[in-house]
Length: 624
Image 1 (cartoon, one colour):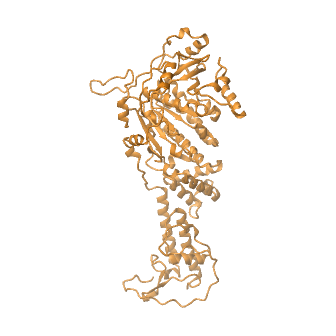
Image 2 (cartoon, rainbow, N blue to C red):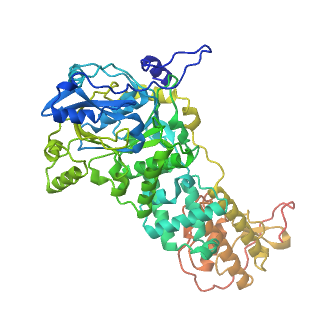
Image 3 (cartoon, rainbow, N blue to C red):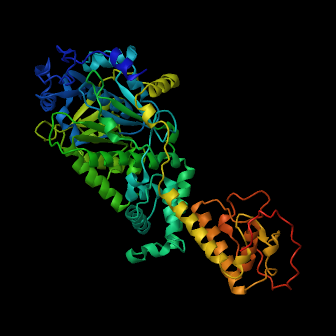
């Protein structure tokens, strides 16, 4: 189902303006219904009436459900959240199976209907149904009657994304430079010293114009900075130890083996795509499909943080607004904070604290409030707490800690939180004047969209029909650090070999492309290049040439440059210098070319007579 299909099938938001005289439609979304005293509120018990009065907002608000009091659901006491307060962030918490995902769906639907774009992560693959109308049934009818909901099936406009093209969805990619050293250190699980070294590597690459688009660019820069050629580059600003570089390179390799290589590169996703509205004025729901990478939570949670950080950098200050520009749901939030470095936590705290003024609201979704650091939790003004379980002593302590985070309440919250059913929650939000509302046990409304995933064919059709698919589907590999360093290394190799060939011995080698052959002097013939102990000429010149050949091949292997040295020259240089050219062992070689030798240098053998020359055409290049 395409966006246009979904928006055409969905009902027009109440109060939406029709086309004007020019045929254009006013895209200003219809405001949510203003609060009025609910019917029957006068007959509520005094304590329940006091709680209900705390949710009697005058401005636009979203309906969450109906008050639970003394075991009864009171449809005359609706529980709501002001639209203007959704950029004050929030927390949706609760044990597994208590209804957190459906709560996300319910809130996302109402945000979309009120013209607010939404981003949410679909970790288990069961949120895609928000794009299709729900199905009526006995349970939906029963829940609607209990909470006073006029339920009507409706689908909402969606875009589906996937990390790097793994699994269904429009591929989301980021360049390594954009991701930055702090977030990348979190993903690579580096310690503080290694994180600082990675920051130094990024600084060097930026100052030298070495673009870090993908992971092979980063590996090339790290390899260069610990090579004999590049190690002096960072001496003036602290240097990079071989040990630290080795840890970083191993971590990157392990990261690639998890499939992360496809997440980095171009075209980089433009996060402003998340702020779009559908043609009918409803907010676009951007769903990040994560089932294919749900076993790599640290990766996707950090990638979500990159999206937020990028939005923070790009969006202008807007101050307090009547509705947010985007609401971002951060699922499995505990995975983001687990094992995080101090710099990473400071980055998250700063983003959460300041992005409110950019008009963006963030909802963290996790199991208990203690999963979220205190500095971040203090910024979350809206709370939807589903049931908690207290099966173990640790669970009991977590329950008590959760209760202490709520305002004073007439409820026995410890008993209430362990007795809530699926689709019920304890709620407190910020009122229109910024004060917390009374704690309200709530039976939540039923989502209007499908409470199940859409089938794979429909999902694929929705992805490929998107206007963004052609823009982001195919990866692009432009010239960057890897290509620049490889080209520089090839130039350096050529210069080293050329210098070595100008030694007394080297002048007898002839053209290097004649693999394993040397010129036979003025006679115009050629013979096989002799091995160690058989090479006539100056010993110093032979050593210079051997070292030049070996070093050129060694650094070429580190940078991934294919080994193109003459085969026999490789063997001879290896034996002459007494150390194998091991770094190039896995690189392409000419057919029949032997790998590096590992035997020690043997004592020089008596020099045999040169082998007979094979005549070559007179047009052959004469020896120098």
